[in-house]
Length: 101
Image 1 (cartoon, rainbow, N blue to C red):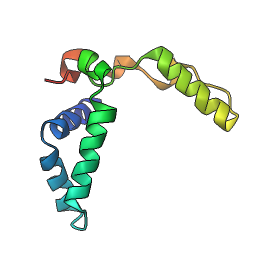
Image 2: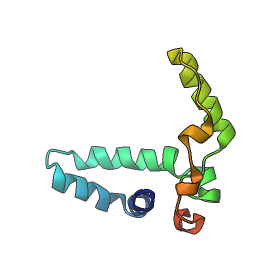
Image 3: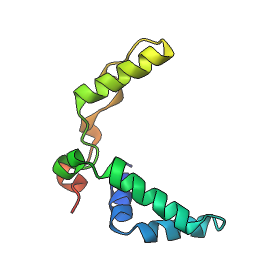
Image 4: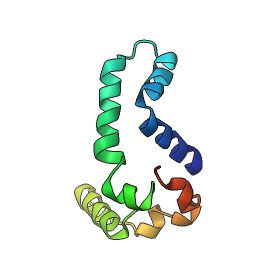
């Protein structure tokens, strides 16, 4: 499943228009121009980060994830979980398959 998601992300990054066309085929009421702009924004600012360029998709910084977990736990007044309980890199495909070309 993770490998499939990585391949789909790489395909969307390579050709956002093709991704939007696939969505439009499934949901004809989609505004292609709006959705393409939204996808390109997400790709630029949330998916293709400096870290992803260096280390590939699904490369998680454990310290940053710990800070995020603690922030969410504090917000909802719940005990924080350990990073290892949420993120398991051993389920990832080989790093080479997660690299962007």
